[in-house]
Amino acid sequence: MSDDLYNNEVAFELQPKVIDESRQGEALAAGHAETARANGKKFYIESYGCQMNFADSEVVASILNGAGFDATTDFTEADLILLNTCAIRENAEQRIRGRLQHFKGIKRRKGILVGVLGCMAERLKEKFLEQEKIVDIVAGPDAYRSLPDLIEEAGSGQKAVNVLLSREETYAEISPVRLNSNGISAYISIMRGCDNMCSFCVVPFTRGRERSRDWQSIVNEAKDLYEQGYREVTLLGQNVDSYRYSDDPKLVGKKLLEAKYEEGVINFAQLLEKVALVAPDLRVRFSTSHPKDMTDDVLHMMAKYHNICKYVHLPVQSGNSRVLEMMNRTYDREWYKQRIDAIKTIVPEAAISTDIIAGFCSETEEEHRDTISMMEYVKYTMAYMFVYSERPGTVAAKKYTDDVPEEVKKRRLQEIVDIHRIHSLESNKQDVGKVFEVLIEGISARNDMELYGRNTQNKVIVFPKGDLKTGTYANVLVTHCTSGTLIGTVVS
Ligand code: SAH
Ligand code: SF4
Ligand code: F3S
Image (tube, rainbow, N blue to C red; front, side, top):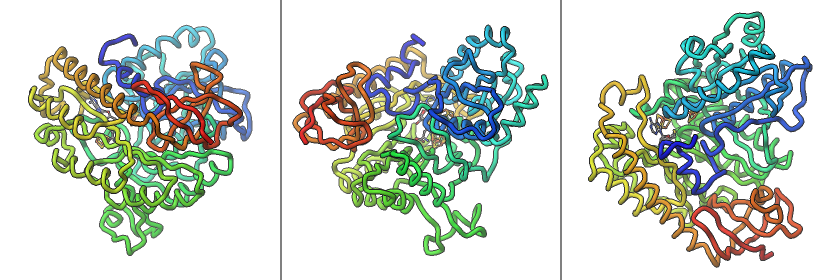
């Protein structure tokens, strides 16, 4: 989309490739997926939205492999086209509708099946079939185990839908088939759903209740990845700080929430430690931290282990307490600042990034300036910045009027983007002259004589290739920078 500020690429230009929607619409193909009992059929999958959706596509690939399907990156040779969709903002949904049009021709010619998965599928349910005639299969985020049955049903000419949400499903024992992987960094889902009910957000409706995955299966997945040569894992959840798991089968639901750590409950800080101990040269990242729940324990754990990356993504959404209350974020400006102070004290070298929404219902100019002043306070190294987009069914849609005019929203977003650009450039300039340990991830897209990787702060560093290999660590001296990238040379 060539759109204006609605197009989140505005944000991603600053540091592309790192997370979230920067990867929107990527076609993913498994390297050498082992197919259990090949049926000669191929599936093609495109993923939209957050890292969790990308991780889910790898679960889907595993389930489909088990049913005999092979992955392809060329949709013209596919028997089944899947879009793993996002519903977070209206333009995310528009993009998917546009993309579906693209497959009309091939569907007419070859009679292939088209399935929609993920959050937009969950939000629209059967309505998807009425609105987009091209769609044969609709499967919500907790329904992927039933995909082989849904495909069979659709193959016999019926439309197939499963949008049941679950309180238990974590796909814990399913070993994801890594798609389009660089073989170095991988996502591990540690929980699903969200119970927070931020008033603007559709996720609690599309992903259902929060549930944590068995810690042992998480550690095992990290170990497997390490043995395969991976050197970085990112633990994923909408609110990783509320991770809670007990091996005691009696401790479920409310009992688990009320249980004490002495009763064998594992919290996020403890999980982090278990994953950090898998191997000293396996980097551990995590996302997303919630300001209301992020504990000092987590920060101390980051400080304790060299391989837990010194980077916190702590979405602020707004810098104004009245707006935060309307958003139902359950923290205020002071609380957020106090969490920032805790990060700066306990993990001084940590980089901090954020998400910001401009123009939420009834936001005044002064309240918008509070967001800007919060940015000045924190000096985020990276930010995802959006204009508010009303989502049907959310508390904000029901209770508040989306009354900030579009041009005001866009202007406020532009101000936020401009300030952020200054901050990220400032922050990068401060890194010039420093040496960072970089995990080498691949060959630079712009110059095949250069490699790129990230430092512990999640900043991308580009440097001459020499005889270095991807998947290894190098010490890189930063010699210059742009607002999005550090540029350097290897020193040892
Ligand atoms: N669980 C994460 C957020 C996941 S959604 C958290 O609580 O921080 C990613 C981001 O999308 C949010 O942080 C928010 O900034 C943005 N977002 C969510 N709903 C939105 C909406 N209705 N309009 C605009 N931006 C939205
Ligand atoms: Fe949405 Fe809030 Fe949950 Fe994040 S914490 S996914 S913004 S409801
Ligand atoms: Fe989008 Fe669903 Fe993620 S709405 S941002 S794909 S949880």
